[in-house]
Amino acid sequence: MTSRDDQRLRDLARLRRIRDRIDREYARPLDVEALARGEHMSAGHLSREFRRAYGESPYSYLMTRRVERAMTLLRRGDLSVTEVCFAVGCSSLGTFSTRFTELVGMPPSVFKRKSAASEQASEPSAPGTEGIPACVAKQVTRPVRNREARERASSLA
Image 1 (cartoon, helix red, strand yellow):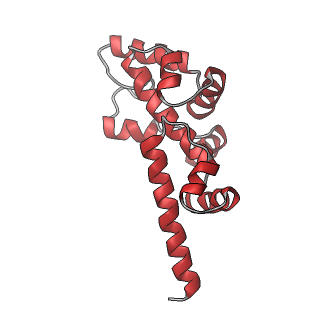
Image 2: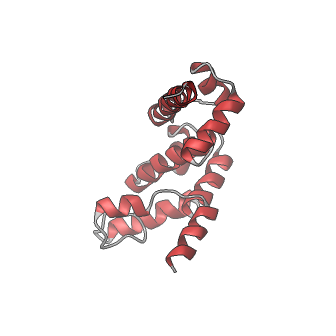
C-alpha cells in the first residue's frame, strides 16, 4: 500500500467515526465545525470527504437521521409535532417541518394523522405500507430527498 492509500483509509475511519457520532447524538446540537474539530479536520474538508464517501453532506445525513426518528415518534402518536421536533434535536419547528416534508413527501402533521388512521384500522404500519412486512416497510419508508425519490421512481418505471 502507498502512503496515499494509508491516508485514505485513515480518512475513511475518521468519517465513519463522525457518521457514528451523528447516529448516536442526532438529538444533540451538532454542527459541521464541531464534528470536524473532534476529528482534527477542517469543516470544508469534512464536508467534501463525507459527501464523497456517503453521497450526502454531514448536515443532510444528520437531518435524515432526525427525520427517521421523528417518523417513529409520530407513529407512536403520544407526542405533538412540536414535541417531536424538539425531541429529535431540531430547534426550529419551521425548519423541521420543511425538512420532514422534503424527505417524507408530506408534512409531519399529515404523517401523524395518517399513521393514527392506519393504527386505528388495526394495522400498525406506516401510511402506504399496509400488508408489507415490517422489515421491508422500514426500508421503503426511509426518508429520501425529493430529487432522489423522483430519480428512484423513474428508474423503477
